[in-house]
Length: 257
Image 1 (cartoon, helix red, strand yellow):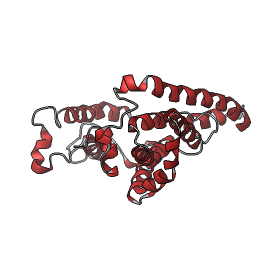
Image 2: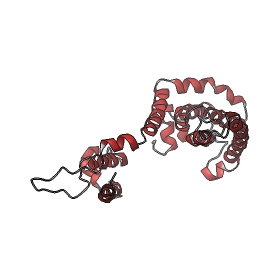
Image 3: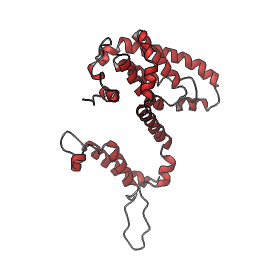
Image 4: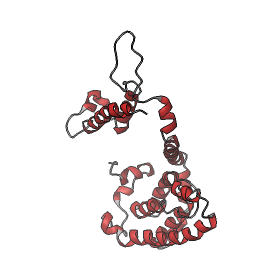
């Protein structure tokens, strides 16, 4: 892109920032113009609107003379095609699709039912098992996909075991970042491996020690400091979690009645 595009594109960025702020600022914002559908516009609506504007607005001051040449827009499709991280979009979208599919198909409930035998173990052992399991699973698949796939399963499992969902969801989420062993685990691992100065064996030997330390730290952190930081009682099953399974994730985020 030329310098002119960046110069003129800054006004689009400022417009996007203003629209973000005044969508629902605590008093009637522009979203209220949609009446009963005022809850539909979101931050992504503003981002998409401004992105579309960049394909239309000129990158330079237009010349309206008869012999003027067409002015290029701020953003051209060839730039978006080559520079936009499409893989990241599909990765995140695929993770959400996996989560929704596992929930609507009953896979989450089935897996939680199969894991219900964990109720014979101490709560700390359950936390440690989930931390270790998710930590090794994320070595072979995307962190985002692993989190979105298992979050429904672990939430239903918490209800089945009559445990506070925070005690299982927090270590599960943190453990998906403990991907140190294989190049396929995360892009940073793949970048380090691409220089051909280390082997998979080298990464696995060093990574497994980091994983073990991370597993113990995450499980211990949630067990010792979690109740105080999250303001929960690890021995009490909360009332808000004693709802239908489809409402659990919303309850965790204070969105459920």
